[in-house]
Each structure stands twice: as structure tokens, then as C-alpha cells.
Length: 330
Image (tube, rainbow, N blue to C red):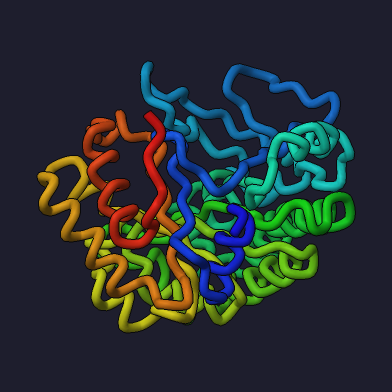
């Protein structure tokens, strides 16, 4: 099977010959990632400003993470029309993609859309103010949600129009939880977000792609909502926080998990034996004989204290159990 076919079959529970691997740090990757370009002519008005007008603190030297917003530019709802809402249909965003696709070979191609929905809303408005607005200004929250989600929906439409059948998945991020619980209860999620997620995933499917979503935090209940909306792959990097057995009991066979040994509780602190044991638990409880699991590295290992040697132990464990015959490049 080609890399594309292995990933597709895992997502669709169509019996891949092994688990798919996204482990570029050790030279193994069944996927090929492509990012969006900025709109033509866009230039930040100050250092570290993004296209939405949010200014970010740079990450500390040597760390590849995203930093933090310095402030929020939607400090008043009266400023709504002054936000520089990016245009997903700007042709310049896609001009570089053709050349990148020529390098993809037989891999499964994922286009990244970055901060997708809730994250983008609170980067603009501020999390505390946004959560107050759920109760005090619900009409404005609905208006903001509609405007924000229009961007990834527009991207999906453009990708489908320009590259249908050649880009296979659309990857997004939306952190939705603390260590203890999701940010909102389910009634609030359903009131402000669920219909928009359904529209977004529907647009991605309409463009001939799978929908991939990353989320950190204790999002146990929200995963079920995403499944109901049509999410295909959920990237979860804290399986111990979520509960490996619990998540398997609730969702195994209903969605494809993209995961790895826990980036907080296992990889930074535990030994090789514990890493191997957790790899086995993940395969036992999250994967199925028909598919449903993608092993995906955490790219910022230096920031969380994970040496490459521990990543190698983890990858070797998964290869031995679920990808026989695949060797780590020297």
C-alpha cells in the first residue's frame, strides 16, 4: 500500500496494513503537510502581528511554539467592522501549492489551516470577555462565530475547487479544555458552536477531504460532539489526562485517533518500560483491527523536555506492535 492508502484506510476503518506514521523528527512520515500563504500585499503593521490584527509575543529562543497574544483587538463590539477579516478566497494563498504537490509523491497530503474557531475568537476578544459575552452579549458571540468560521470554510471551498483529489485532509487546531474539564458545558457548546462545526466539517467533506482537529485539555465530552458533527481525526496528545480506557470505551471505532504517549505525564518523566507499556495501552484501547489510529509525534519536544532518545523508544515500540517491517532511518 502507498502511504496515502495506509492513512486513508486508517481514517475510514478500511483495514490498513499497518498504522500510519507522522514522525518527521525520526525520518518517517506517511503524510505531506502544506500551509496557507498570506494574502497578496498583506504586511504586518508592527512586528509579530498576524493577518487578523493580533500581535503576539515571540516564543523564547530555542522554542518553536507560537507564543501568546499581547492583547486583543476586539476590545469593544463597536470595533467589529475594524477587524481586518482575512479573505480565504484570495488567490495568492494557493499560488505556491502546485509546486509543493509535485514533491508529495504517494503521501497523504494535509493542508493546515491553523487556529480555527474558538481559539481565533478568544484571540480576538479575550477569553474572559468572550465567556462573559456568552451570557451578556449572545448575539455578538453568534456574529463573531459566523465571521470567524467563514475563513476555514472558505479555505475548504477553495482547496476543493483547485486541488480536489490531490489534497486529502484539512488540519486545524482548537484547544478546548483545561486539565480538568472543557471550557464550556455542553448546552453552551451546542448553542454557540455545534452548528458551525457541522458546517465546517461538511465543507471539508464537500471538498473531498477528511477533517483533522487538534485539541488539548480534558475534552472527553466535546469529542462526542465533534463526532456528531462529522470530524474524522482527532489529535489528542494527553491520553493519560483523558483516560486511555475511558476514551477507548466511549469512542473506539467511532473516530480515528491521532496520538502518542502522553506529552505531559509520560514522555518527559517516565522510563522506557513505561513508554512501551503506554504504547500498548493506546493500541489496545484506541485502535481497532480495521484502523482508527495514527501515531503522530509532538513536534516541540525540546520545550517539554523530551529527548530524541525517548521518542525513538516510543516509535520503536509502536513499530514492533503495529507496523512490522518499518525501520527507523539511520
